[in-house]
Image (cartoon, rainbow, N blue to C red; front, side, top):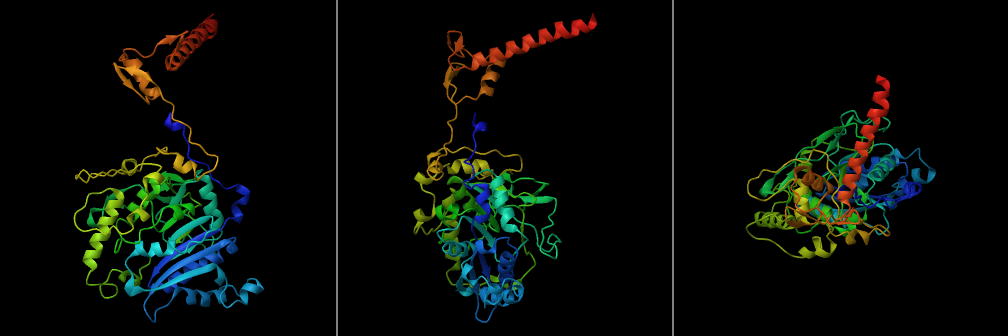
Length: 455
């Protein structure tokens, strides 16, 4: 019965998709020039650049390239042949950019940086795209991403993965997307730092024509309706955390009602620049961001992540504003236990976590009223209940397949009470009717067709 249930459909008419605004959020650590190219490619290659808003958390040291001024310098040249208004601008599309410039010496890792980026979200953006500050966009990426999201047929859908490398000849010289036949799909899990679950490298799906349901979330590419960012906050008090960022974010989003999908072939319209930048990899270096108290801060950050995901821990923890950054019971559409089962993780101490690379199915909400309040007019239809007696024990929510199994093995002491020739639950009647129909069809076919041919 549960297989007939479906998530809430997209609340966006196809003809209004081109008018939807997209907020791009990026974080950059001592990587101002590549960040500038990221912003430039997003605006230059969007089909509707006027509907794109970009927010950047730019962390750098004195004297290093900053994202915004470097972008402005590049954009003045790039947009010189564009409209007169843009070409004459000191910094094209400047009014669509919001930048939070920070001292790299005070950085406390990617999770905290993304928290600050989330604070830059406006009130009117429809879609939100989270990326790293060294990503590369392709032509018409905005159209393809919205189309992919619509194809997921889920208002609560999040298109997310570890995108391919931008230097692998997948982007044509003119900016067109020439994708591989394989798209990355997040389905494996392993133990990371502090024993916290973290994603394995992506598995590839061949020629995906639509988004594919998965159990994992990737920080470098995440596209969804912005209500996901407004409803599920990124925890400020998770200093120095890298491993565990994605699994904890996945747990919070999924229990709040969201679902994850890897992109289709053409929905993979943004790439990642994986070429090394030694400077940008120093966020954990004590020479740049180290403090006397880093060890204690990291322990408390890891334990706070474990508290979010229900993982046992020892040692100190900072619980400041924890309720603000977790999903409260009144806002949970699903349970944490369900998420752990769905993602293949348990905390039994054996460390035998299982992949989820097979075909997954949407998990209905245990508290659908949470999502129903967000999506006007949508109701999760009730899961039909089959009330019966099997082997003398009353059971509820018995699937029809279980009833057929019980009939086949003869283990039903009393399946139902007949009333006016019908079973009280309707299942026995349906089974008998289907059996009679097949028998009648078989006899008719034999005597009318087979015997006639022999004659």
